[in-house]
Length: 145
Figure 1 (spheres, rainbow, N blue to C red):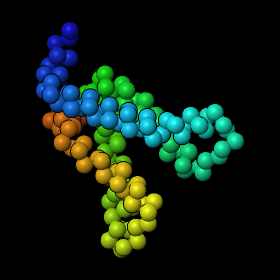
Figure 2 (figure 1 turned 135 degrees about the vertical axis):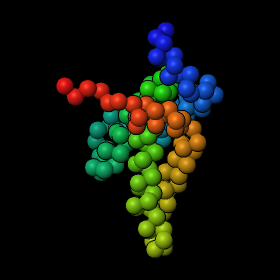
Figure 3 (figure 1 turned 135 degrees about the horizontal axis):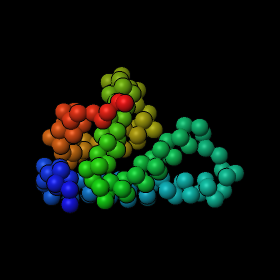
């Protein structure tokens, strides 16, 4: 095994790697239960139409679940996937849900989406932030030329 590779994985404890794998598995199972039946049903019966954004969201979430399978095997290499999920949900909660909530204008659909997005609160406790900082902030970028 490459010494730099083993040094990288030593920075993150085995228990943290298992927590990351559990998080990826949660994503795979959760979206597998919710999104995959919808996507398969649409693929089998193309006569059933989707609203544009419903189709976009369903396909993005389905691809997220597929990529999370790789995260189960390579939890550190797939961290950008979890960071993306954390960021888009936080942005949505702050920019969309919070103003509606403070104005008392949350409808049932928005509450449902906000509830789903609130699962993201566990992410910061599982993501190995020292590793993220060392490998995505401090580390020299790949060459440009």
